[in-house]
Length: 392
Ligand SMILES: Nc1ncnc2c1ncn2[C@@H]1O[C@H](COP(=O)(O)OP(=O)(O)OP(=O)(O)O)[C@@H](O)[C@H]1O
Ligand SMILES: [Mg+2]
Image (cartoon, rainbow, N blue to C red):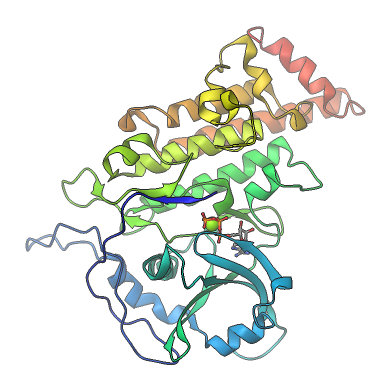
């Protein structure tokens, strides 16, 4: 899905140097949102670039030749994806100590004409360079070359073999993503966001939460990728960060699109959209559907969680395996995230708690039914749960 850039992004102040293999040129940083400086007694929190400086040695610096060799000259046969930043390739690199087997990685190569460009590449290096959480993708290193052959910007990530949540919900995946797996994936993603909002020295607003940015590892554990649009949250008495609105159509919070005022509440809105995507198996925006059904949020409004019609919006591919009370809970959670008033949206920590309850409820229901009807294959689940919920 395409990103929107309503205005051209502004350049920020100058940066500490990124270590560059072939030239040692300093680079501009994305502007820091910090506005409050130390007043003396209370030390001000460090900025992202300051925190990055302390951890930059953890990232490997690759030469362009190394990454070209790792991908067989960026062969289209090993291309695994394409986004607004550029193309993504599967490759293999030597471990940093030079010993042992080759390691599989994903290599993202900036399009020379890419709109998102250098600024987002740098933001990604700096944010992923300082974060450390099981639900955030690991950045192994980068390549930054301003040579005779022009500018090259690449990022090297751990390889996520099961692609993205988007691929599984809307792609031609052979296997349907079961309901409980969807919940576990979205819980992991919520934990990643909760960490960004409250688990670091500075608050981080992710700004690009969507199903294509939730990548899945071998065990379908989710990790958030793409930190090119991430920003430091407001500092001091500020309630928001003023930015140029950027993001993806269908996922961005309305108040952010209108005013450019960025808060963690904006991530909650996008999260609510993805909750409806996992419930319905439909994209946030789908131009291939009848006009009335193209915008997911407009469509689901006609089937409120408390109404008899609610079950009609559930992804037909999971119809025999979900617990209606858990799906209602998820729809109500989505509605709370999609509150027009940003301040009335829940926090990510609250979202995590509700998701845990919904998972527990769904798993207990599965266990009960397996015990009662070992041969029922989920169909009985639907019938029994309908009885539990007379409102359906
Ligand atoms: N670390 C990774 N491991 C495996 N596949 C990846 C990895 N990173 C990205 N991909 C694949 O590449 C695809 C494109 O990713 P990318 O982030 O460039 O674009 P996008 O998320 O689809 O769009 P946008 O640029 O708007 O964010 C992903 O959907 C995923 O399938
Ligand atoms: Mg992406």
